[in-house]
Image (cartoon, rainbow, N blue to C red; front, side):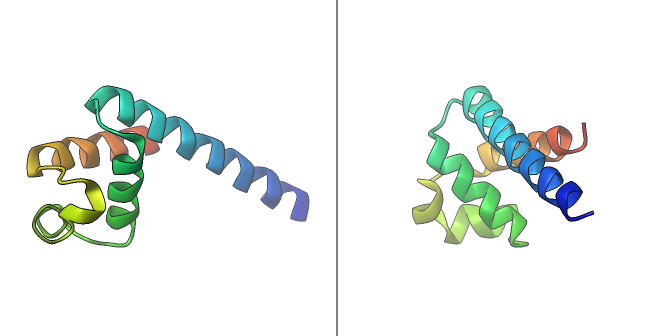
Length: 79
C-alpha cells in the first residue's frame, strides 16, 4: 500500500514536469514564469489578482497569457 503511494507521487511529479515543459513551449515564456504562475493558481489566486498584484512573481505575464496558461493547465491535468 505504501509502495503504491510512493509510485503515485513519483508519477504525479513526472506529469507535472511534462505539463510545465509543454506550457513553456506552447506559450513561449520562461520555465520559471510558468512554475510561478502554476504555484499561484494552485494556491487559489485568481487570474486578475495574479496579473495585477503578482507581476514580480510571474515576470509580468499579462492577463491574456495567464488565462491561456490556466485553460491549458486544466486541460492537460485532466487528460
